Image (cartoon, rainbow, N blue to C red; front, top):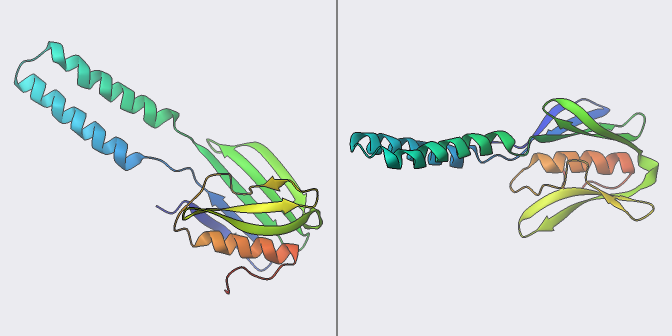
Length: 161
């Protein structure tokens, strides 16, 4: 599943979202295993042991609902030279920050053992992460966003387009 999706990429505007990582496949495998265990216990009439898969299924349902549901959206506007970062939870904006490109010195890709994330470096020295602090692997759309950020700031592209 792609975690970064380009919503709009017109001449002067790029909007991208980074969706949260989920362990949907793993939760599905454990859920099927617990259902199989429950069927086996019913088949062998081990009624007292049936509480274990029931509690396990309740735990899987709970864990699948409380997972990180935060989405990050970045709007890169080439005409106004502004970068707007939004943090969304369940489709509602919970925080937003607009940064003029003149306040930034560079946009870089930060690497950590194969995983990477986009970092904006401000003139006062602090860093911000327009698509969240989550590190991703094998996301080619990260470079599309990085190159658009570098273009707004006035840097050369990180990867030829």
